[in-house]
Image 1 (cartoon, rainbow, N blue to C red):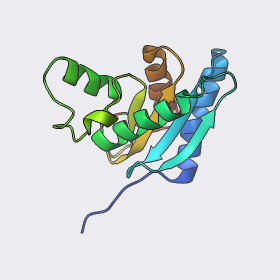
Image 2: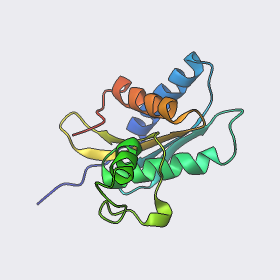
Image 3: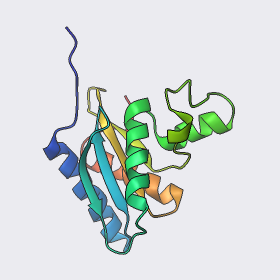
Image 4: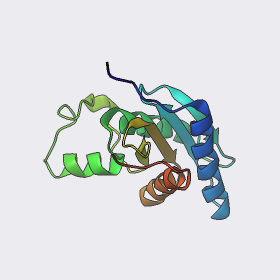
Length: 143
């Protein structure tokens, strides 16, 4: 019988702490949300000085990355190029997040565990923080 893999709360806190450290080292602030494989929020930080909507956007980015198993920047590019549609990716069009900053989380064996969303910076910066937090915590961003 197959196993279901998911982030533990300790693993999520480790990634969250890494993201906050990265942001503080750059004198930046953001909302960071981590969800497990079934898109349930398990860790969140809303840093001082961020726009209120960023917490919701970070959650949506994390959920999309967890659901699809790809970063939101990849799904955005696939959709913008016409290669895929939200429906093909299993995303309800009204729930599509067309911005970078959502990244899936995999363990070292390639098991999909969840996703992280970062929001408040430029898209590329959100994406970089998310990727680095995952990698710095000993996890992977792809299988």
